Amino acid sequence: MAKRYTYYNTVTQTVIATGRPWPTADGVSTPPELDADVSLLEEVRAEQPTYDQWTEKLEKDAIVYDAQAGTATQGWSVTALTQAEIDARTPEHYETDGGIKMATDLQSQAAFSNMMTLLNEAGMADGDMVAIKDCFGVSHLLTVTQFRADAVAYGLHCYNLFHS
Image (tube, rainbow, N blue to C red; front, top):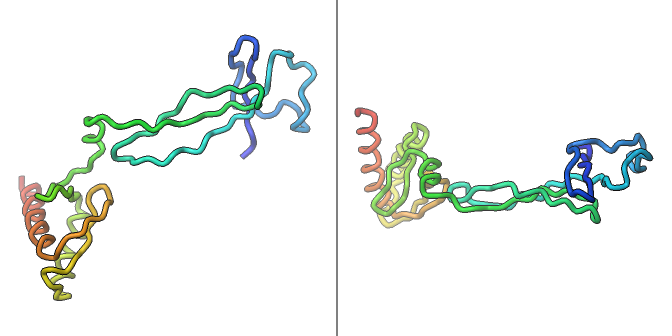
């Protein structure tokens, strides 16, 4: 992608224009008609930090204009979501006694049904460990006994949703 530039007045510290290509054909020389108070700043986007999309959000910071470095940098901040925002982002789910939020969409219901069938067909022992993913995609380890109990309660919950 071609570089873009911000025209920046260093005396008034104001932006004149953004998203512009370099104003001369050679891409390096300063145009002779450019006012001495105006700098061409390369627009830079800082790398976005990693964050937990379920509990945090990414926000753009104010652009930092640095005439000496010749850059106009767009940065980022990570801020915590409010409980209302977390609730709005949390998929429909059933919460087990152990606090695992199991998604109730049709694909998730089919996956849990298939897993129950697999455990039965494989003849897994009650104390064997299995992993399930919650509605956020986080894995949780359970014994086969605990999984069966949670899966039955989950199935009944989904059944009641379907018939309500």
